[in-house]
Structure formats: C-alpha cells, structure tokens
Length: 46
Length: 249
Image 1 (cartoon, rainbow over the protein chains, first blue to last red):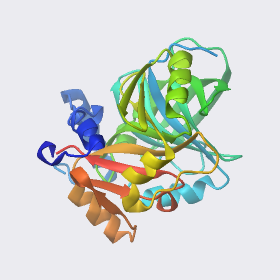
Image 2: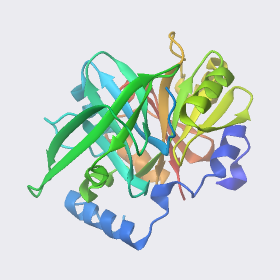
Image 3: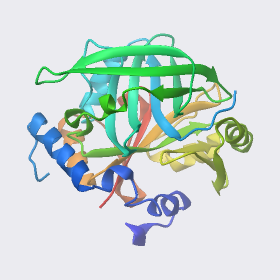
Image 4: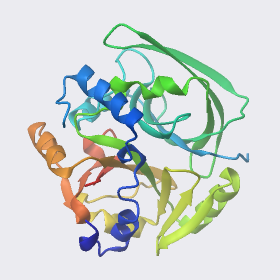
C-alpha cells in the first residue's frame, strides 16, 4: 500500500498501517477473537 | 470544562431511529450488541485493556458526539445489561460527564470496560478491527483544534492544508475544512453539513479490502474505492456517518 501512497491523506494513513491497534494481535487478543469467530460461526482462519 | 483525556473512547450517535441505523450497519457487516437493550454498540478490540473502543447508538434528539476516556469523573451513572448468545449476562456501567463544545463531546469513565470487549462482539463479518479515527468538519479547523487541545489536554498537528489532527491516545480526530473534506471524499460525493462544526465520519481498520467489497456487493450496499484500497460508504448507507475502511494488509 505504501508504494501507492501519493495523496497527503494516504501518506498520513500509511504511517499508521499496520499500527491500527486491532491489527496488532497479541496471543491473548488472538485467543479472544478466535472465541468470537467461533461464536459467530465464522471460519477460524479468516 | 477541562479534562485530561486518555483517548477517544467511543463515538456516540443519538438518533430518532437507532434501530434503522443498526440495520444499515448490520448490512455493512458489523456485529452489534443485542437488540432490545440501549445502547446498541459496535465494539472493537481496544488498544489498552481499560479503554474501550466502540460506536454506540442511542435514541433521542439527533446529535453525534465523541466520548473522551478519563480516570476520574463525577457525573451521571448509566448501567445496562446485555445477554450473550450463550445466555451470559454482561453488566456494563459508565459514568458520563457534562457535554462540552465547540464540537459535541463529553467525558466518560468506565466502571466495567470488559463489557465492551466481549469476544463475540469484537469480531465482525466485514473484518473490522478497530475504530482508528473520527472525522469532523469545521469552518475554522485550526480554531476548533486549538479549543479541543486545551479542553482535552490533547496534542494538535496540521496534517495538511484544511486538515487538523487532534490526538489524545490511539484514536485520532481529524478536523477538516468543508472544501478539503469534500475534495478528499469526492468518490462518495461527500457533502459537509450546514451546521458546523459537526462529526461526519469514522475510519475503521479492516483486515482486507476484497472480502469487505464482496460482502457489501452481496448486501447491495453501494461503495466507492479510494487510494490505498480504501473502501468508502456514504452517510446515506451507514446510519448518517461516512465510513472509511482502511485495509491493514
């Protein structure tokens, strides 16, 4: 995505990817989300 | 009113018909807390364990406000209980402070932050991971940013001409001039509201853009694509807010 970042807003966003907190998965977070995916019946590797 | 804000905690949407908005947000692939209990919330995995990250829908006179997380607060205590699919009762308690300005905001202290982090509510079929940013439009973004900097003990930065950043924690507030906002989001023909300043949208981090696009197509939700594989939906499609989905891959 960074290579295509030309507009000023994309430059701003690119500096934040992949820093979005939901994307920084610790083991505990992954476990919590896995439980959530199973509860929703979503594929667990999705 | 002056506070020491830890982060933007949540976005509060008060609507005349919150259930209609909830149905639209379901069509966008969000998973909401159970119907029949106010507030309906879209919860995300937070950055800090005691600072929730969510969007709430309330019924009442329409206003969109940001809630700032604080550790000390005297105010109105609000409690509610949700029931999970498994029949567990999840009790939530928040203390809400007085409303401030010039952009609608209020302080909030959580007594049970875990209630907004239940596993089955932080996972979304559209791959949403987190609320990254809130967008507002103002006649004078610099003046609004300066006022909020003082009120929230925040940091302020000019991202570019017509776009100011107000930062207290992980979730960022972008304050746009009407012209800059309409230009940046012209793909969905974004229009600035007449009464300014106003909160107009949110940026949501998503795992990948393609599955989200497939979901929106399947649900007949119109969307536009923008630079960086961003997916945009207009306020008409999303309960009155512009949604910008920012892929993390």
